[in-house]
Each structure stands twice: as structure tokens, then as C-alpha cells.
Amino acid sequence: MFILVVVYTFNFIDRQIIGILAVPIKADLALTDTQLGMMGGLAFALFYTALGIPIAMLADRSNRTWIMTIALIVWSAMTALCGTVQNFWQLFLARLGVGVGEAGGVAPAYSLISDYFPPQQRARALSIYSFGIPIGSALGIVFGGVIASKVDWRYAFYAVGIAGIVIAPIFKLTVTEPKRGQFDANHSTDASPSLGTIVRKLAHKPSFWIMSFGAACSSMMGYGLFFWLPSFFVRSFALSLLNASLFYGAILLIGGLAGIWLGGSLADRFGADRRGAYVVIPAIAFVATVPFYVVGILSPNLTTTFFAMLVPTALGLVWLGPVLSAIQHVVPPNMRATASAIFLFINNLIGIGVGTMAIGMLSDNLQLRFGDDSLRYAILAGTAFYIVAAMLFFLSAKYLKNDWEK
Image 1 (cartoon, helix red, strand yellow):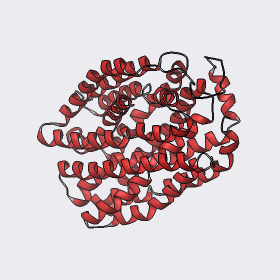
Image 2 (cartoon, rainbow, N blue to C red):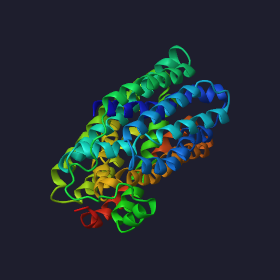
Image 3 (cartoon, rainbow, N blue to C red):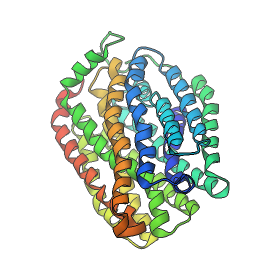
Image 4 (cartoon, one colour):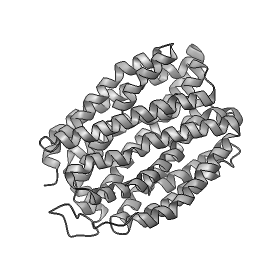
């Protein structure tokens, strides 16, 4: 589990480091906010989502640790390549390559963890794995800010890319392939179900689709914040790039770890008796984020913003352990990697591909009216995504009990 978290941390360092580096990259390559949004979201999401399903089908049939090792090498190498680019399209293509590698990094890990831990511990286990999100995002933001301020933004890409390549053989030597479905009493003996079989299975599971689109709505705000908040602190509070990275890195690390663990613990505690708890808990958390974001984003005081933003950062990540665990339980063990990839396809194509770009486009459109504060109001408008996500999660609770694999 430890090395899985380390690899997921690198996954998010490489994915999110572009957020803090957006400030010097924009100046160096003369980009607009819309172009930054495309490069930070759509460029990564295109192949990340498209390749995730066939790679996950392979993971349901073969050795998952080998797939993850190769994926780690590919996305790390492409991250290092980002440091060599000279224009928008070169960076766009390099980010496509990062997405190609990371397509094989997450769904196989969900399947592995479900075979390492029994059902009553899976929400917490998947929450611990998800610690890689705030740790990796915070490290990427802080490390990127330090390197960009002290040396050059290109060296940040070189450093994290090379470090990921070094980790790859350590991962392969330390993570063993567990017996598939070893903690599940009743599961299919078919070792290689087709994509059609899996889709037909999911077609009768309405909770899966509602959870997927609910998670996608929340990710539009979540990934948008990961990418744009460092730029917001620079523009609206006149922080230096280094101070902005330390400021947001602290918010993300403290709030993110607390929220993820809270969600997994509550789901394992209440979900055994009430399956709907796996989605109702995140839905309540999403609704509760809105007033705190209003205070944090609109406040002119940096200290008020820091403490106000800690709470919604935590609440916005409560969903990870419960929902990821529920996704593993609506299909048999031999379908989990592929079902996870379909979930990630919906979640990330919309969340990463649309969310980051939508906030960037809205910021550009508000530029004439609000100037450097355009990001402030674009981010504030994005809280509507959490309300929609909450409504969908509440709806999915109606079906989850019947959809749960007995």
C-alpha cells in the first residue's frame, strides 16, 4: 500500500505541477487562459480517458503490476519531455503523452487494492490510496513553485520526470500480484469477460452511471481548482509564485488528507448497514462546501481565505473513498479494473477535459470587467458544479442497495 501511494503521488505531481507552472509558462510562451486551460485539462484528458478502458481490460486479464510499472515509466518520461517545449502545440502534445502513460496507472490499482483488503475495509483502503491526490498535488505545486522561482520552470519537469523513472523498478520489486477476488465469497470464474459483457452488466446498474456523472461534475470544480487557484493567489493577492505555491500547497495537504480519511472512515462505519451512505455522505459534503468557498474566494484578507478554504478543500474530497469503494462493489472482481476505467473515462473526460478549460474561458470572458480578479469570479461560479454533483449522488442512493453485488 505504501508504494502504491508513492506511485499515485507521482501520478498527481506530474498531473498537477502544470498548475503552479502555468504562471511562468504563460509569460514565457505567451499563452491565453483558454490555451492554459486546454493544455492543463483537455490535452491530458484526451488519451488518458480513451486509453484507460483497453488498458484496464488488459489488467482484468493479466498482471496488473507490470502494467502499472510500464505506465509509470511512460508518463514520467513524457513529463520530462514537457521541459523541452518551445510553443503551445509542443506542450499540448507532450501533455497528451503524459495522459497516455497515466491511463494505465489508476484503474489497475483500484483492482489491486480490492484484492488486498476485505469489503469492510475497502473504503478506508481506497481513501489511503487517494492520499496520493493531495500529497502529489501539494508536492507538485510547492516543488514546481520553488524550482520555477529559484531556477527555471523547465527544470521542474525534468526533475519529477526522472524521479518517476527511478521509482518504477522499485515499484515492480515491492508490489506483488494478489489472487483476484480472494476476499469475495461469490464471484465469476470467467477470467476474461468481454467489454460487451461488462457494459451489459453495468447497463442494469443505474447507480454506477449516476455516480460516474456525479463524480464528473464534482471533478470539474476539483480539477479546476487544482489548476487555477495558484494563479488566483498570484493575481488577486499579489503573492509571488513561491509564496502562492507554499500557501495553496498547505491548504491542499492539510484539508485534502483530512477530508479523504473522513469520507472513507464514515463510509466503512455506516455503509455496511446502509449502502446509500456511500453516496449520501459525499452529497452532504458537496453542499456544505459552497458557503465556505464564497467566504474564501471573496475575502480580501489572506488569513481569512486560508482558513475558509481549508474546510471546502476537505469536504470536496470526502467522496473519493466512499464512491470508489462503491464502484468496486457493483461488479464482480474480474470486472473491477474495466468498470473503474469506464468510471474514470466519464469522470476525467468531463472533469479534467472540461472543468479546467471552462474556468479558463470564463476568466477570459470576465477579463474586461474584472481585470486580474476575473479568476475570482470564474472560480466562484464553478461551485455550481458541486450542487449538481450532490443532486446526482442523492439520486444514486436510491439504486445502490439493489445494485450492490451480493
